[in-house]
Length: 276
Image (cartoon, rainbow, N blue to C red; front, side, top):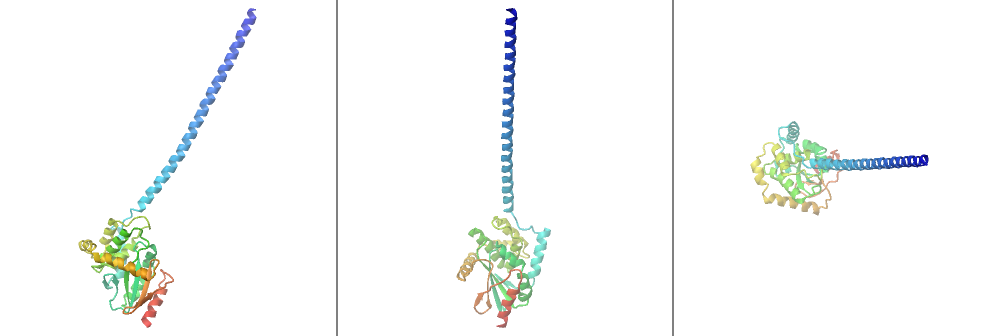
């Protein structure tokens, strides 16, 4: 009998040990599962954080691009640009929005938006050849007119175009226009701020900044921007740059160009007017 009781006690003890071991394994398995779950959550959290960081960086880059300013006067870049523009225009008469001899036989009317990147192509491409040749020789004068296309905010458009016209009150409009196109920022980034306009004015050689600031309030300049836009609309222009050409004392017609970087189509139109 004693042996039987002992055997039952021993069997009970082994069963208890197995149950304890099983319970421990379950605890370990549950702990491991919990660790795996935590690891998975942390991994997902890391991915989310990475996505957020990338988004923040993208926003910062976009924001940074919208805070472009004109090249600071006195810096190497600004000095190089200002010298290039001044060399191109030096000695050529200016009057308001007109560049060239007022008695030049042919007139080219140039409709542009200062934020238009395609106008910039013309400024850096075909235009220098026209200015250095026909304008400097007294055969052509160029009138700059405002037409809103690339600038998204009408108030910004008016402010920037008036800023250029105000420089024209001191016969420096073409310096301002050329500097603007050279310093032009990326489209739709809101880079045209009051600071940008002021810094451009500071680069115009000989511009009286006090007078320029005062002239920007002249209502006649804002009216000129409006009139230019109406003229462009009446001509059926759809984009910038657009051009009218003709005898200075006669009617004008649309100039159809084949390239804004190669002046050949402009040369042909000018020669036609000179010879007719």
